[in-house]
Figure 1 (cartoon, helix red, strand yellow):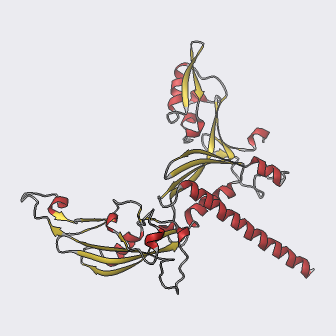
Figure 2: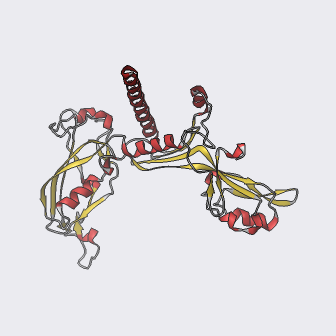
Length: 345
């Protein structure tokens, strides 16, 4: 394999080459790389590309896929959040059964920082340090001011739909003071929980506690957390004229543009990271031998979307803290095992 191909996944028309993993991270041709820890540190880089209140896109460069996947799994399953754990149903005369209603309530994301609360063990009583309490009492009634020929349930009835905004936070202990600047509430006010009709009532008390996504998906702090390898598009021969237009149309918008150079229309790659690697271009005989599609093996494009309880940059930071903690535990266990082997000798 050519030296320049060792760090590339090669995309062909009917297959993908150079994807097989080896026994050693960051190795190629099944050979362990002769790199020091300092060299690995220097090659590692994180570049933030895009960030909003709920989303972040960043590049993780210079690591093995095992590290990237560990970070993704931690984001999904090992960062604590607060979520509804117990629903005490006092009265429910709606058509949705208690169990289904409790399940729907449990999936409503809660705006609360888990670092402000303690873990609650099964034998622990609920306190203001480990539990958030909501109450919900909603009754559907006829709207006396509605027109006689009205057919829209939202106008015919009051509280015909029950939304997450109707969860009322009931502060316990000193919670009202602790969270005066940022009251606890559902992240989204427009999540439909159930529907009612006149005479139907829901009355319940709801307890939230701290948990992680590997115990239940409702605790996962992210809506999505994914990564992909950085695409590369190499034009080996000039593609001009009408072929340049066809070449551009083989890729998503913004990947390839047609530029005018010396009066000749020519295809030029402007942003390969937008490519979805559909391989459409490889279906056309006109481009055979003129284009090469690859992906950079150690360059990961991460996309993380928070549910809103924790900012995306904080999520990534906390995920890295968890990863480092796991490494410390592994190092300590390995050192203990080696020490035990040496003492046995």
